[in-house]
Image 1 (cartoon, rainbow, N blue to C red):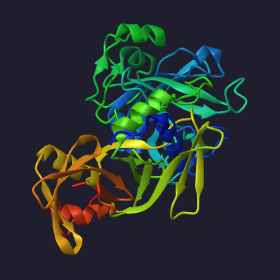
Image 2 (cartoon, rainbow, N blue to C red):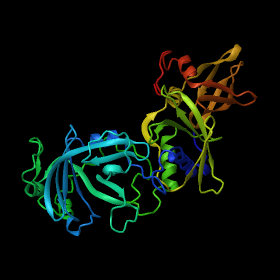
Image 3 (tube, rainbow, N blue to C red):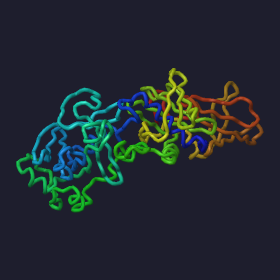
Image 4 (tube, helix red, strand yellow):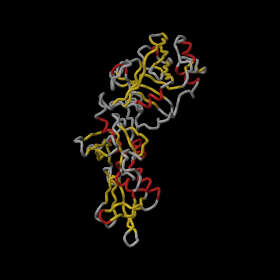
Length: 405
């Protein structure tokens, strides 16, 4: 359905409120990694992260290329420049899920705590599909940062080992199958980029599934990470799709002509709760009021967006998609009277056959996991739970409990 244009720019802000309670480790806006831990683990495994440390405390270490090969068994083989000298190191690496940051990258620590936050070098990480840029951010530790977010490492991922690092760390035990990039002969980052601009992996599968504002607070330089236009495009593209909070809660965005909703799903994919999205009193954001949970959450427009797209169309909306595409009337149960024959159309239009062979116009919409149909001249609004409706038309089996079929 086409959402109300006056709400579109603000509705996404309310979605942030869903994750606000889960991501408040730092003062100010939460700094969500651009993708989940599974994506980054796959991106880095058996590949090389070529990077620099632009905010290193040692001026002589800035602008120099580092290389870290990430083996599938968690071994990290690195050639780094610290305190004015090249060092070959073999340590550990991992990416962990975090309800506060979505995903955290760690080099050196092999612990197993589920969400270490900013402890022991765990840092949020960000990937830009268009450029292939990969960077991490941290708080404090950089000269002049005073507790603010700063870019810790900046670079890209490639499938080869720079020749310059082969010479800088000749004793590093690199995997035999890892090719050496003969073009990258300079240890200066600026030069290395120009020597092989096509080395960076771009548009990696799954990288398109990221929320607005997934650029990192440090990279944004203190400015807003999300505009109203960004949110409007994201909402329009994800209406009826499954989204996921940093803590892994799955939700469905259901925009409507009457109101905008967010459905919280249980472990079986059923609608467990519904939040109505409303403008905040000051007009600077949105509040999300859950109907069953006694919580009213608020979000400020411009902060990073917490709910990440999964690319999954929720089963309820997928059902009406199929009915619209089929273009044929479908018989739906109508109480004790029997079935009612409905033809679904785009933009929420529906027609029903009357007893005389004519047609009645009406509207359809999704709300609280139910399909609602209002017909002209009929005081009663018809409503069906989506799973019951899907089983009635044979879209899913009686035993199915998945979110989308």
